[in-house]
Length: 306
Image (tube, rainbow, N blue to C red; front, side):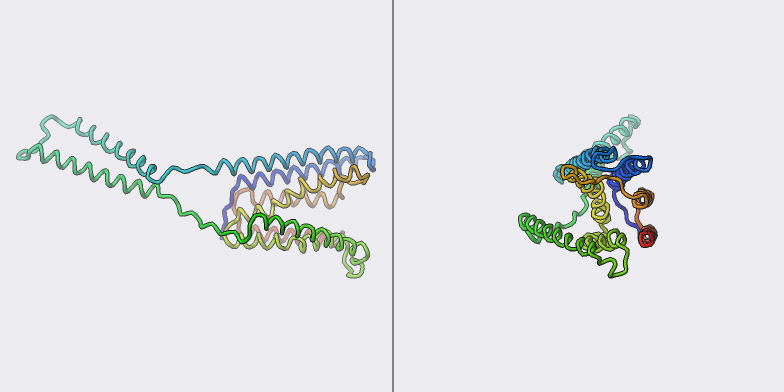
């Protein structure tokens, strides 16, 4: 089948990813043009300035999202007010039409053998029927859609924050252990390239819960939430985490810049371009999903033979 999602939010996310790919291409191009390397090199200073700009762009993105969500929450008028307004509007048009038709009639408009009281009663009866039909039509047109039942929270807000903090600490410790084992020679023992472990295996295992959540919401026909989970995390990493790491490494004296390898930068830019052309129309189907999976497999093969 075909799933529809909000096109405005999708284009906004993808625009930020395109901007982040441009921010990564500039240091790479400057480095290949003969830029020096080191903590005080022009590439390092350029990366720090771009990192500040990217974090500011991410802050504006969050402000835009929150402002739009707040503007969409508007108090709706009571049901009786909407029905009364609709019935009055329809009734006003019907009475006006009846008044105009009566004014256009010739002067002697009573039938022969019929009293004016009978004609007036029939006209009033038709007016009452018009009012009843207007009310029924207004109730059909202005009936709100049934809202989905809100699921009751499983845990409280405080418990959720505590669990998130505990899980973040555990993930940090496990990540350090994983990186130490890979650097100690785990890739050589498994006969797997270290770049393949860092780029393919570790992200799949580390984001297993996120991937599962996106699949579940997509199966429940909630593509907006699934898209937010899948692409929102990419925006967060590209515009917040990587620039923050560059700025944190600056006072530590570490040579960390936005200058990635040519292969990684080109693959990232091509992936963003493919994603933009795939979902910019606001439609999702199994053919596009198969195309994205195929592209990911091609990238994984390229990383293996890098």
